[in-house]
Length: 172
Image 1 (cartoon, rainbow, N blue to C red):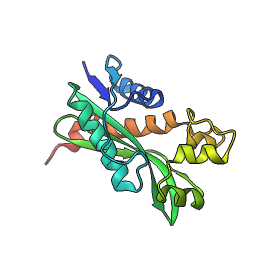
Image 2: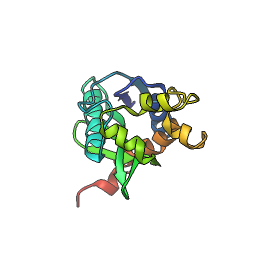
Image 3: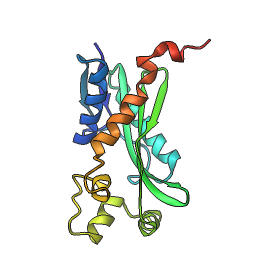
Image 4: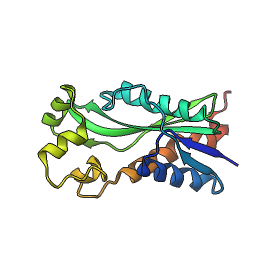
């Protein structure tokens, strides 16, 4: 029986991991624990975003899980534009596997505000009366077509590949 600990108690992240993990292992037990990411609250760049996810996965694993899973949202620059995406990291005590979510481009002004030290959610709240922080930025910018949970679910499924198909990852 797999015991999976998610390095967060965020409802969307827990739902994404539960859906992804139980699609492979229906009897798996999934629970969330708040653990530190070790990166700023608003990660900027792929390195900080990946590091936050890996740190969360390792901290979650240390709490007694077969698999620790960390999910971190961040803003990276792609083709000279800020892009919001997430990273999922899975750790089993030996190996780490990571996968990105889909990304959504952000207006340049938003990227500049983040570089100046603002966090994305509070920044958007100041600009738009109809922004719902509990739903998130991806759904806000896509009229609900991309939900945070859905974006993370696909990345969880992908990041689990080394445990789902271990023979493909075996050293030759």
